[in-house]
Image 1 (cartoon, rainbow, N blue to C red):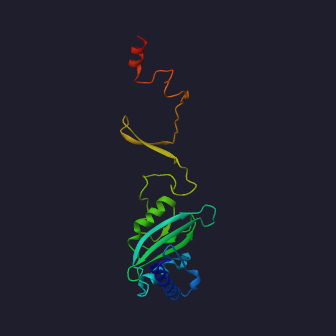
Image 2 (image 1 turned 135 degrees about the horizontal axis):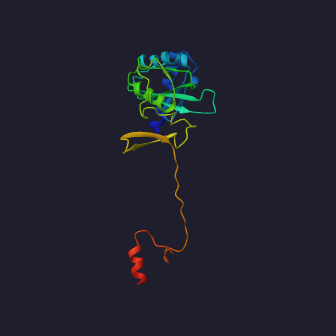
Image 3 (image 1 turned 90 degrees about the vertical axis):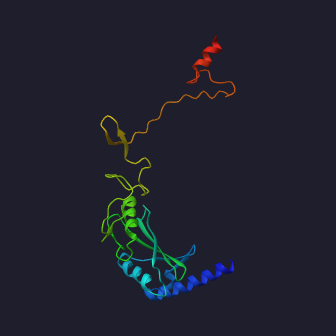
Length: 211
């Protein structure tokens, strides 16, 4: 480990102790992974925890980087909502996670961080994660009337419908997915010898050869 990496680890360890003291929790509940402090909290503690890490001058996690979802279908509470924050004053990053399921909403943090608006909409659109108190929780990336949540592990790779523009009806149509596969006949003969049938576009050459 280089001197810089060692100093970074020491700084994060001190920051973890400060954070644990502010949140009145055991410092062992905090982990350091890939240069990030990582903390898991319950739904009821989410807003107060984020308010604390933002407003405490010794923490200063005032920048939100990302909010995203992770799907673990085998779990009872299948989703992790993951928040990433940056503290410019401490030059440190915090990863905060909370668990939820398909029906239990997560408190929206848009009042604390207005920039979380579209992040939460994206998590709702792609995973179906609900956020209570969000000012405009609707789909963001998928089309109107989209069926399902495309980043869930149980979502089919083909989707449920396909979209095309019909020139006769002059409108966009939604139709069940059809996976058409043309029948192909491979003769596997040497490419140096050529095929025993006429390749499309090579009809003229075949006629000249026959004459």
